[in-house]
Amino acid sequence: MSASAFRVARVQPLLGRALVDADERPGAPPVIVIGHEIWRERFAADSGVLGRILRLGSEPTTIVGVMPEGFEFPAAHNAWVPLRIDRTASGRRQMPALLVFGRLAGQASEKQAQAQLNAIGLQPSAGLSGTREPLRSEIVPFARLFFDSADVRTALNLGNAFVVMLLVLVSANVALLMFARGASRESEITVRSALGAGRARIVVQLFIEALVLSALAAAVGLAVTRVGLRSLLAMLEADSGQRLPFWVVDSLTPVTVAYAIALTVLCATIIGVLPALRITGSSIEARLRESAAGGGGPRFDGLWTSVIAAQVATTLMFPAAAFVFHRGVIRGQTRDVGFPAEQYLSARLEFDRESAPGVALDATDEAFRLRVRRTWAELTQRLTTEPEVAGLTFADRLPGTLHPRYRIELDDGAPTSGASTLGHEVVSASVAFNFFNVLGTPVLSGRDFTSTDPESSAGVVIVNQSFVNQTLGGQNPIGRRIRRRVSDTLSTPGLWLEIVGVVGDLGMLGASVTGPAPGIYHPVPPDTVSPLRVAIDLASVRHHFPQDCEVWRAKSNLHSRFESSCRSMPSARTCGWSLSMYLDCSPC
Image: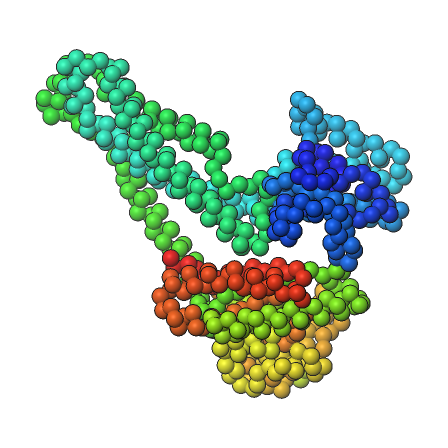
């Protein structure tokens, strides 16, 4: 980040200094400003952290500052290094893409700033040959930059639509009940008026009664909202594996509370004051005659009858639709994936590397791979000594999730089911050699992977039963060879791989989540998969805790122990480790 970003944010460091312009010059010593979380967790809040050297990638970097708690600008960041751009190293239109932030000056409006940027955008085209159009700029509010995608808008709109429908339903029910309540007290209010109670006194009393009810409802609503908001944000972070931007808070803001108070007063006015004014608006004599003749009480004309009928129909339809939707979600979560998923935990394990993945191998990559292997071996040794753990394995995709797709061809050209000039579409997973053993999945025919298969030059694969049925038309697959076809992402055909075994369908999902897809499993070593999706067998937990809720709690208690095992290993150095209940919603 450029040093000017700290001046835009206007937050002073807790210790040391922020980045300065001199840090961005070529050849300047590498420096880093760390966030409060890193300072507290990695350096035990040591006040002498300034000047210490840490390795950022392969480069020793000096800590020059610590930012205060809560500073995560621009989104959810906790470390900052100088942005250095070598303008001579890139040709035209080859500069890196940058996000530009700014702060409006004084009383300037967005409209004025936009006009100024438009004028600036006209200048470059005047001095550059070949530039056909001016630069076009658009001012976007800060938060919208991160949440203005089509997917986010669609999700928010669907969520809002559901909530609005629910609020309309609840509000209509409450309004109907309050109307009936107010109308049923018409005789009482008439008698009180006849005994000398003034109109203002009656209106104030009914308003206070409604205000008390509304305030109680608002208090309950705010409490539920606070708990629900925290749960929702925690779920979003767990699902995405990333922290939410720092301005997304999990507590109620003063504006929210003020909004609830305003709605409380408005609601009390509608359900208390308006009925009171209506009832006390006519003459006392007319109301007494109607009451004596039995004409008092609720009166529903044709319009109200239609409203009530529509309300009852909606009340019946909405819970039914919600039940059907919820049942569909639960069915998706409890889909049979071919093994007892309730006794497993899943983890996502990711390692720091010092160079970009996919580049030519060098000493740095070899050292990275060696470190991953050592960490996995040490982690396996540590966790398998835990009494609750029966085994662990890894894959690039776990059962029940979407798997990458590609097309293959067979070696003998024999007729197969669903053949096309484009080959057969399959899904794949890269797995550890003990993957099927840990998941308790038997090999239906052929053999399982061995410990030497991941390193063997003779490529072997195992296919699932859907591959046999859909791709081979039920023919025996053992000994047949397949390879990946040329595609947009593959310029030459892949290596021939021999099918050595068949397993049942383990929830390998392709483009459709309605059923398992034809799938292929490749045996790989742990250093070729990033991130590692780890499956941990907790069979003994299920044995000792037969109740689902107890199993869930036992799994939760294991989280911190597993994470500590990863972070405390010398070979791990730093590793991202996140655990979840694998395909197992909390029954508590």
